[in-house]
Length: 454
Image (cartoon, rainbow, N blue to C red):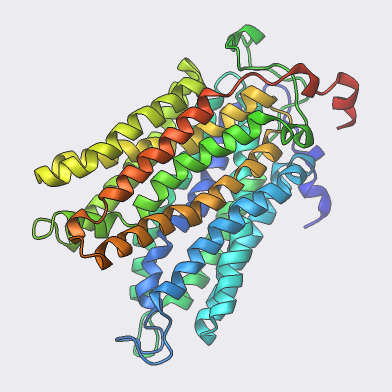
């Protein structure tokens, strides 16, 4: 493997290249890193890694294992912020290959941590190294697709990010099957499964990374004209990443993403327990698992649907729908619980999860509308720190408020009511932040001579 094979100059597409060959590569990377949403399948087996048939002295607690996923999400946002600018300089092949090394390597180091029962190795492996792979793997396809699809930015990013939402649907049953194969009298099979997944994802992501191509400078799809994007918020100019973070628009969108993700991710992490407690006696564990799977489907489908719709109605109106409709649905959830209507309860959360996923898929296009496409990968990377914050804030709000309510004698079926109201308030904050977004002032635009040097 020579450095030349990874060089950005080696992947400029020839004339007549079919841009539809790029989305499968993007989808391949996102399906691989989407495994992160399925990490919970390892929690119970890891909690009895020593006892095998049951938890024994020295086994990890579920509260300790919960930090593995949280750390991975935090490192996703931080690595995306730190390496986003480097991605634009290095190109998607190199950054995609580095993401494959980090993600696959994170599993391998995590396997060592599981085998030696060292939690710090698992945290560094899957949480830190794997989290860096998540961050680079997340922004690499998005940046590339936006350059190939200036006329369909929402649809393009929706195609890739849909894979991140759906990756768990493949990873969860695959991981469970592998653990069953590798489990034995002295092992729960997690370490061996980590090794298998690490190798599998490294190969899949490397193939995808080497499939990336970049359009030649100044390339536009046939029939595309600048009037294809007539809305006031869409610029044909470029804002450098260092200048973008000085604008109020960047921080307003940071709040928009953080509020949307916080409201969704906290509920997503407690979906199984919530529906069983609200409908005690009606919903058992297997039905709750089906509910979680259904939410994953709507999460995945919403990423493509809403992002594609945003190409037609605009990003700002799309987020206005997210926040206004989401607010009403969160306030309606306690009512559906009191009514005892499982169908209405599930329907509310199904729609909410489409907008949770849609928020992820639409934000890169929103950024490219405001700041241009040249540095969107770097800008998107820095904005993903909002995901890091939401990854901690959402679960903490849901879990601690629930525990506090129960400690005060509130029935479990009603312990989520205040949380739902709080989520509605967060969405109201996001609605206002989105309402305040205005076009970027021309003083922030990059001059032509500076763009060449950049």
